Length: 109
Image (tube, rainbow, N blue to C red):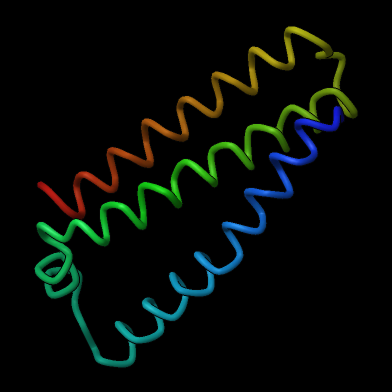
């Protein structure tokens, strides 16, 4: 792994750690309050804060995962160099698109 990828992956890990903790706390709160999916969606509709939070979560997770999947391919498969980079980049784009679609559905749809 080159130094730039290393720094980006570690940086996104630093960002993701508190975001995952907050996400789990929200899930814990919702389940213990007995909230239904409809209740949760009613609370998240139109919330700029949730859109920004989960949008940032999506981008950080996509960057982190695409670097990790690239490293897995380089180390464990015949896929190397530009082919591994292309696959990892495509994987990251798919994660961003799916994640932002989910954020849109929860906050705006």
